Length: 233
Image (cartoon, rainbow, N blue to C red):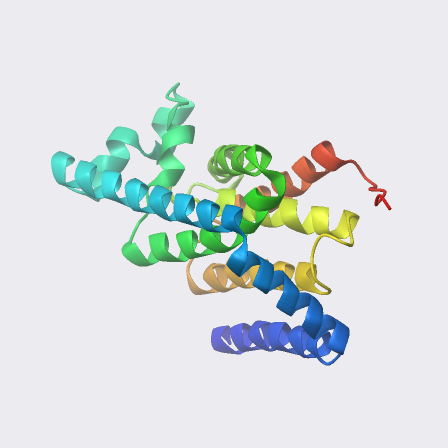
Protein backbone atom coordinates (compact mmCIF):
# COMPACT_ATOMS: atom_id res chain seq x y z
CA UNK A 1 0.00 0.00 0.00
CA UNK A 2 2.79 2.45 0.84
CA UNK A 3 4.62 1.90 -2.42
CA UNK A 4 1.31 2.27 -4.29
CA UNK A 5 0.62 5.64 -2.69
CA UNK A 6 4.15 6.84 -3.46
CA UNK A 7 3.72 5.66 -7.05
CA UNK A 8 0.42 7.54 -7.39
CA UNK A 9 2.03 10.74 -6.08
CA UNK A 10 4.94 10.41 -8.49
CA UNK A 11 2.54 9.72 -11.34
CA UNK A 12 0.65 12.87 -10.38
CA UNK A 13 3.82 14.94 -10.67
CA UNK A 14 4.71 13.39 -14.02
CA UNK A 15 1.16 13.83 -15.29
CA UNK A 16 1.18 17.50 -14.34
CA UNK A 17 4.47 18.01 -16.14
CA UNK A 18 3.04 16.32 -19.23
CA UNK A 19 0.10 18.73 -19.41
CA UNK A 20 2.44 21.67 -18.85
CA UNK A 21 5.00 20.67 -21.45
CA UNK A 22 2.60 19.57 -24.17
CA UNK A 23 2.24 23.24 -25.14
CA UNK A 24 5.05 25.23 -26.71
CA UNK A 25 4.36 28.08 -24.28
CA UNK A 26 4.87 25.82 -21.25
CA UNK A 27 8.12 24.41 -22.61
CA UNK A 28 9.51 27.82 -23.49
CA UNK A 29 8.61 29.35 -20.11
CA UNK A 30 10.32 26.56 -18.17
CA UNK A 31 13.34 26.59 -20.50
CA UNK A 32 13.80 30.34 -20.09
CA UNK A 33 13.31 30.09 -16.33
CA UNK A 34 15.98 27.43 -15.86
CA UNK A 35 18.29 29.17 -18.33
CA UNK A 36 18.00 32.25 -16.13
CA UNK A 37 18.65 30.19 -12.98
CA UNK A 38 21.74 28.66 -14.57
CA UNK A 39 23.26 31.96 -15.68
CA UNK A 40 22.17 34.50 -13.07
CA UNK A 41 25.15 35.50 -10.90
CA UNK A 42 23.00 36.13 -7.84
CA UNK A 43 21.49 32.65 -8.10
CA UNK A 44 24.95 31.10 -8.23
CA UNK A 45 26.07 33.07 -5.17
CA UNK A 46 22.96 32.11 -3.20
CA UNK A 47 23.36 28.45 -4.17
CA UNK A 48 26.98 28.44 -3.05
CA UNK A 49 26.03 30.21 0.18
CA UNK A 50 23.42 27.57 1.03
CA UNK A 51 25.92 24.84 0.14
CA UNK A 52 28.46 26.34 2.53
CA UNK A 53 25.73 26.71 5.17
CA UNK A 54 24.88 23.02 4.86
CA UNK A 55 28.50 21.92 5.08
CA UNK A 56 29.09 24.06 8.17
CA UNK A 57 25.93 22.91 9.92
CA UNK A 58 26.70 19.24 9.49
CA UNK A 59 30.37 19.74 10.31
CA UNK A 60 29.39 21.39 13.61
CA UNK A 61 27.03 18.52 14.34
CA UNK A 62 29.73 15.91 13.74
CA UNK A 63 32.19 17.89 15.83
CA UNK A 64 29.87 18.18 18.83
CA UNK A 65 28.73 14.57 18.49
CA UNK A 66 32.35 13.45 18.70
CA UNK A 67 33.11 15.86 21.55
CA UNK A 68 30.06 14.93 23.63
CA UNK A 69 30.12 11.19 22.94
CA UNK A 70 27.35 10.64 20.40
CA UNK A 71 24.13 11.92 18.90
CA UNK A 72 22.04 11.21 21.97
CA UNK A 73 24.34 13.28 24.15
CA UNK A 74 24.27 16.06 21.56
CA UNK A 75 20.48 16.14 21.59
CA UNK A 76 20.31 16.19 25.39
CA UNK A 77 22.82 19.04 25.48
CA UNK A 78 21.64 21.28 22.63
CA UNK A 79 18.76 19.60 20.80
CA UNK A 80 15.05 20.27 20.93
CA UNK A 81 14.22 17.94 23.81
CA UNK A 82 10.61 18.54 24.79
CA UNK A 83 10.80 18.44 28.56
CA UNK A 84 13.79 20.80 29.00
CA UNK A 85 12.27 23.17 26.45
CA UNK A 86 8.92 23.27 28.23
CA UNK A 87 10.80 23.81 31.50
CA UNK A 88 12.38 27.01 30.22
CA UNK A 89 15.16 26.12 27.76
CA UNK A 90 13.39 27.96 24.94
CA UNK A 91 16.69 28.49 23.11
CA UNK A 92 16.42 24.83 22.09
CA UNK A 93 13.72 25.86 19.61
CA UNK A 94 16.45 27.78 17.78
CA UNK A 95 19.29 25.26 17.91
CA UNK A 96 17.37 21.98 17.78
CA UNK A 97 16.12 21.94 14.18
CA UNK A 98 19.65 22.14 12.78
CA UNK A 99 20.58 18.68 14.12
CA UNK A 100 19.69 15.70 11.94
CA UNK A 101 19.13 12.06 12.86
CA UNK A 102 21.18 10.60 9.99
CA UNK A 103 23.19 11.49 6.90
CA UNK A 104 20.15 10.61 4.75
CA UNK A 105 17.91 12.87 6.83
CA UNK A 106 20.38 15.71 6.41
CA UNK A 107 20.90 15.07 2.68
CA UNK A 108 17.19 15.09 1.85
CA UNK A 109 16.52 18.28 3.79
CA UNK A 110 19.43 20.18 2.32
CA UNK A 111 18.72 18.99 -1.20
CA UNK A 112 15.28 20.55 -0.82
CA UNK A 113 16.82 23.67 0.71
CA UNK A 114 19.24 24.08 -2.20
CA UNK A 115 16.31 23.94 -4.61
CA UNK A 116 13.59 25.97 -2.92
CA UNK A 117 15.90 28.13 -0.81
CA UNK A 118 17.90 29.34 -3.78
CA UNK A 119 14.82 30.35 -5.77
CA UNK A 120 12.99 31.91 -2.81
CA UNK A 121 16.04 33.88 -1.66
CA UNK A 122 16.69 35.16 -5.18
CA UNK A 123 13.14 36.51 -5.36
CA UNK A 124 12.56 37.63 -1.78
CA UNK A 125 16.03 38.29 -0.33
CA UNK A 126 16.36 38.54 3.45
CA UNK A 127 12.63 37.84 3.86
CA UNK A 128 13.14 34.28 2.63
CA UNK A 129 15.99 33.74 5.11
CA UNK A 130 13.82 35.15 7.90
CA UNK A 131 10.94 32.85 6.94
CA UNK A 132 13.31 29.87 6.94
CA UNK A 133 14.69 30.64 10.41
CA UNK A 134 11.31 31.42 11.97
CA UNK A 135 9.72 28.50 10.12
CA UNK A 136 12.09 26.10 11.86
CA UNK A 137 11.14 27.57 15.25
CA UNK A 138 7.40 27.50 14.55
CA UNK A 139 7.60 23.94 13.21
CA UNK A 140 9.57 22.66 16.18
CA UNK A 141 7.17 24.31 18.63
CA UNK A 142 4.15 22.93 16.75
CA UNK A 143 5.52 19.39 16.72
CA UNK A 144 6.34 19.57 20.42
CA UNK A 145 2.94 21.01 21.33
CA UNK A 146 0.54 19.30 18.94
CA UNK A 147 2.45 16.29 17.60
CA UNK A 148 1.77 13.93 20.46
CA UNK A 149 4.29 12.55 22.91
CA UNK A 150 5.31 9.33 21.15
CA UNK A 151 8.81 10.83 20.89
CA UNK A 152 10.52 13.31 23.20
CA UNK A 153 12.57 15.32 20.71
CA UNK A 154 12.56 16.97 17.31
CA UNK A 155 15.28 17.57 14.75
CA UNK A 156 15.74 18.63 11.13
CA UNK A 157 15.18 21.77 9.05
CA UNK A 158 12.30 20.35 7.02
CA UNK A 159 9.84 22.73 8.72
CA UNK A 160 11.85 25.75 7.58
CA UNK A 161 12.19 24.28 4.08
CA UNK A 162 8.43 23.75 3.78
CA UNK A 163 7.92 27.32 5.00
CA UNK A 164 9.80 28.42 1.89
CA UNK A 165 7.60 26.17 -0.22
CA UNK A 166 4.54 27.89 1.23
CA UNK A 167 6.01 31.35 0.70
CA UNK A 168 7.02 30.73 -2.92
CA UNK A 169 3.77 29.00 -3.87
CA UNK A 170 1.65 31.76 -2.36
CA UNK A 171 3.67 34.45 -4.13
CA UNK A 172 3.51 32.56 -7.39
CA UNK A 173 -0.27 32.38 -7.12
CA UNK A 174 -0.58 36.09 -6.38
CA UNK A 175 1.85 37.14 -9.11
CA UNK A 176 1.22 35.09 -12.23
CA UNK A 177 4.27 36.53 -14.00
CA UNK A 178 6.75 35.39 -11.34
CA UNK A 179 7.06 31.69 -12.18
CA UNK A 180 6.62 29.49 -15.27
CA UNK A 181 3.23 27.98 -16.04
CA UNK A 182 2.48 25.13 -13.64
CA UNK A 183 5.53 25.68 -11.43
CA UNK A 184 3.35 26.26 -8.37
CA UNK A 185 1.51 23.01 -8.95
CA UNK A 186 4.71 21.01 -9.28
CA UNK A 187 6.11 22.61 -6.11
CA UNK A 188 2.93 21.77 -4.21
CA UNK A 189 3.08 18.17 -5.40
CA UNK A 190 6.73 17.96 -4.34
CA UNK A 191 5.65 19.28 -0.94
CA UNK A 192 2.99 16.56 -0.72
CA UNK A 193 5.55 13.92 -1.68
CA UNK A 194 7.97 15.17 0.94
CA UNK A 195 5.30 15.20 3.65
CA UNK A 196 3.08 12.20 2.94
CA UNK A 197 5.62 9.56 1.95
CA UNK A 198 7.73 9.88 5.15
CA UNK A 199 4.51 9.99 7.21
CA UNK A 200 3.39 6.73 5.64
CA UNK A 201 6.77 5.06 5.98
CA UNK A 202 7.61 6.03 9.55
CA UNK A 203 5.69 6.99 12.73
CA UNK A 204 8.68 9.20 13.55
CA UNK A 205 7.83 11.58 10.70
CA UNK A 206 7.17 15.11 11.97
CA UNK A 207 3.89 15.53 10.08
CA UNK A 208 2.64 18.35 12.31
CA UNK A 209 5.92 20.27 11.89
CA UNK A 210 5.81 19.92 8.11
CA UNK A 211 2.24 21.15 7.78
CA UNK A 212 2.83 23.95 10.31
CA UNK A 213 5.90 25.08 8.37
CA UNK A 214 4.01 25.22 5.08
CA UNK A 215 1.12 27.15 6.62
CA UNK A 216 3.51 29.55 8.33
CA UNK A 217 5.30 30.26 5.04
CA UNK A 218 1.96 30.84 3.29
CA UNK A 219 0.91 33.24 6.06
CA UNK A 220 4.18 35.12 5.65
CA UNK A 221 3.32 35.49 1.97
CA UNK A 222 0.04 37.14 2.95
CA UNK A 223 1.85 39.46 5.39
CA UNK A 224 4.58 40.41 2.93
CA UNK A 225 2.54 40.70 -0.26
CA UNK A 226 -1.13 40.97 0.73
CA UNK A 227 -4.06 39.07 -0.70
CA UNK A 228 -3.78 40.58 -4.17
CA UNK A 229 -0.97 41.76 -6.36
CA UNK A 230 -1.32 44.18 -9.23
CA UNK A 231 1.27 43.62 -11.94
CA UNK A 232 2.88 46.81 -13.20
CA UNK A 233 2.87 47.49 -16.91
